[in-house]
Image 1: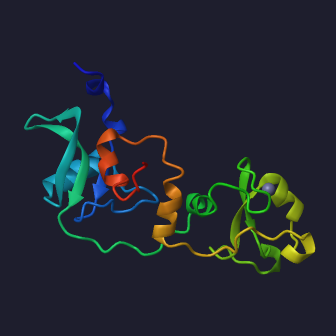
Image 2: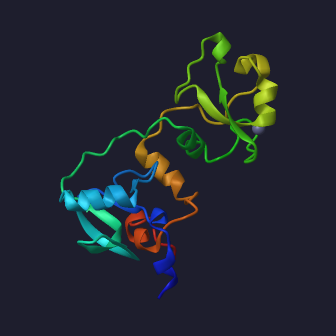
Image 3: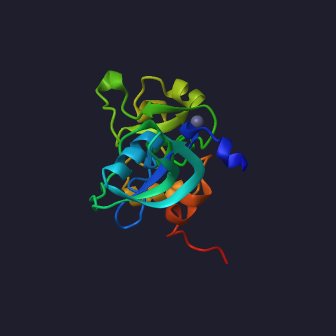
Length: 187
Ligand SMILES: [Zn+2]
């Protein structure tokens, strides 16, 4: 038996590709639990592209868990990514927008909430804890702290470009062909 055969089913999510074989979503990466994936296979909504060694058994069937599936029907991808904490960090390349520090990252409202600043792409930036504390409830001019980049809502393409600099920790080998297919090859 191979080591993979001992892998818990819970550790076997499937990468979900659109009908054009690009990931359905990059941020967050479109992953389904093995239960949802098996259900989609039985409902005939997906094709199995690649499989894990790990099998699931029931009295009536044995099946290797899919590691990559593709949707049978194309879904129009969203043009703009979700406004999430991770995506704000990714837009700002995991660095404080006031001093460049990559540690102790938090979120700063450029126009403070106490002055009516909204929690939106165009008013939230990545800031290290010391800079966040220093700026406090002040406007950028009062604090003499201006973000390196004017915060804006990024496109999926822009986040994807930054995402290549910060690949996730765990990527199954069978996913790689579909994740970085448009990465420029290093000479
Ligand atoms: Zn800082």
